[in-house]
Length: 128
Image (cartoon, rainbow, N blue to C red; front, side):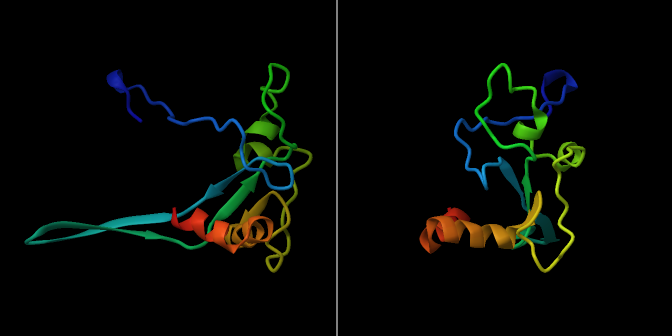
């Protein structure tokens, strides 16, 4: 986001009680293609959401941030660039088993959500 004066900033909201996978905080990396066509009637934007993506997990089990734990980036930040430096980072070396390691597929995530919370919740999560 560009602020007044050309200063850049990230806008986010911290989730007090995040959903965890196996005790680890995670994020979803989704891929959206935005394109448009132009004709005599004007601009016609289109968006395409790829139905797979990545699940990136922290490498240290999550506990709510305190003064003592706030600096523990491997617990609170899901960035691959940070977590790959962790001694606990686990690579997935088998493409046929996408539910292992700290980078997993979105396809695996939907199966995990369904197993833990049911098909209705999985569908609600994707459609809402």
